[in-house]
Length: 200
Image (cartoon, rainbow, N blue to C red; front, side, top):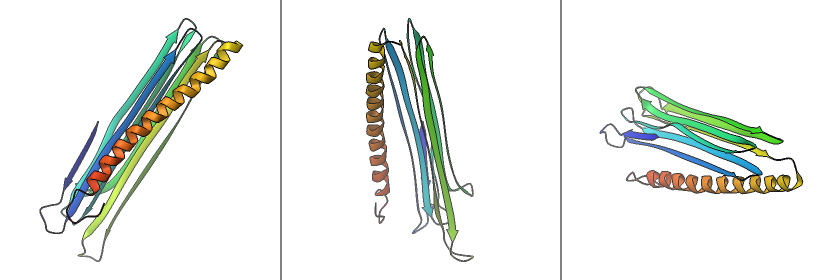
């Protein structure tokens, strides 16, 4: 799940905002010749603020996704998870973290394959103009992982079907991920315009 918090410290001209979002997709398809499973997990957290009494965080943890298939010839399994967080001046800390993991397996007769990848980014900054200047800064973290497993019989018809299945599952999984990411992005854009006097 995800959690966001913002507190402007009840002080004039202070501001704080936090946002968190998760996107997860799983797809699986099997017949008597070929089978495959796909997963994508993504998590993002962002926080920013102005003023020493302001604090905020965006936190998304444990975005786990599983998909599996099986038939008389074998099976496939795909797993991903992602975590991310961003903190501004929360309990005195401004920090960010992004983490992701994946696992994929294809097992059984003839053609088997598994693949995946992960990426994470984290950035945080904090500054103050002079010794008594106003504190300002922000942080953001993101983690994303993708994996897939495949299995098929080793004959001409199965190889053609396996290529078609691979394309179909990749397309479906990617489309659903993009849809979820757009929804999460729109929620973030809405948040960025929610504070009076701030430009999106």
